[in-house]
Amino acid sequence: MDLSRSFQRFAEIGLRHFNPATSAQSAPVATGSLQVYDRFVSDREFGIKKRLFLVPGQYEPEWAQLVKLEGLPGVWLQEGMNHDAAGSIYASVVVLHEAPFELSLRRRTGGTARASGVGKVLPSLVEYAKTWGDFSRYSGNESSRFDNVDYTVCSWYLPAGTDVDLDTIIVSGTKKYIVKEVTTFLKLTLVRAQEQENP
Image (cartoon, rainbow, N blue to C red):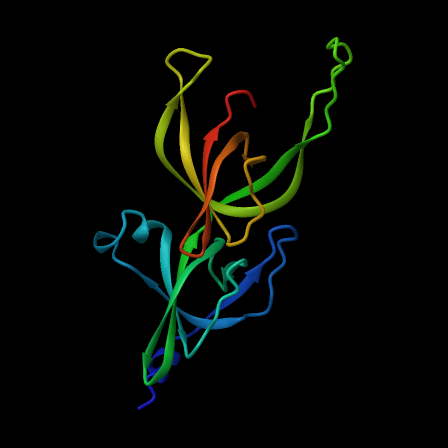
């Protein structure tokens, strides 16, 4: 019995790679069906931000790629995957994580100052990459400059291999975030950051 046939019957949605710099999309790299996971039996954000994409047969994601689903809105991260097998692989289950925020990744460049302080030139923020990601707030941090002001300490989920380090400033809309830590979460790049006090 070919178990992949049951998955093929419902595989009607194309998965396309998405280029954040140009907004261009590739031809479909896989075709599957989209499933909603019950958030009450998993982490608190699963049913809100995550979906399961079921692909017949064997599929190996390119983890660094953002993806879009044919006929559906939104940009998605590829967070993880499991193969279903019975003797051989008959399906691939990809965890998709919604990425609703368009981000500009910037670093400071230039800037000079004489010993006297005269003629000081402040460094400027220069964009070196664009991407999409998801934001998760998990605590607050008191301002060092203003009383009764808290700043968000948060997590940014970005595609695997995103070029981000402690010198990166993440810009989302009018807000800027200072990178405090860079690690991984499953196949994603996970960034701990704090909202910048002096934009």
